[in-house]
Length: 207
Image 1 (cartoon, rainbow, N blue to C red):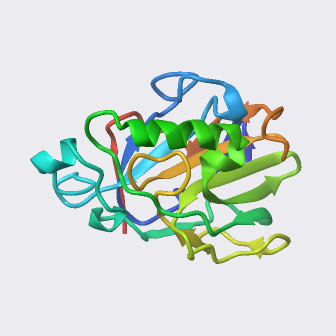
Image 2: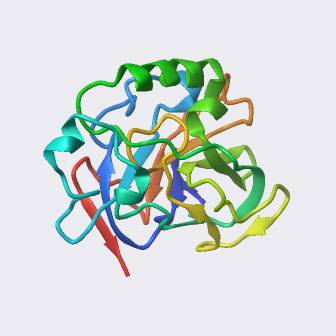
């Protein structure tokens, strides 16, 4: 499962996805070690032109419904075999914010931070892929989480759909690995996908 310090995973999706906030380019990848996010990585579903959604002038000025985005609801799959330790659904998919900073969004972001890691993760699934090795897949679409705690999953099992819940400015998938369910005190673990780690701006395309 692990090669050296890296947790070995399979890409948890099919189709075209843009890599963002990759630890291949910067550690900590999200500019913080808070909530074991040191080596976390984001994948944004994109269309054939590499866009998460068509960009209009209005996109820079006002929030957009997540349904406008090409990957909203795209299947999210198990990246390794293991046991589901947590599965949370029911958080709303809020409007996306790709443009000027939104005061309203900043307020909700502070509220989510007060809710701890779960408030930032939104709808999510946590899988124990080896003893003391947990992998979380976050920001899932409300109503799509397809697994329950205690369930065994194999690689490629459907976990849910890509969404915009939690601390997310547009529909995307946040993946991180850590060493304990108390994420406030857990340590982030490095990850690799199919033996490598893609850099920011790289397009991952899978059949």
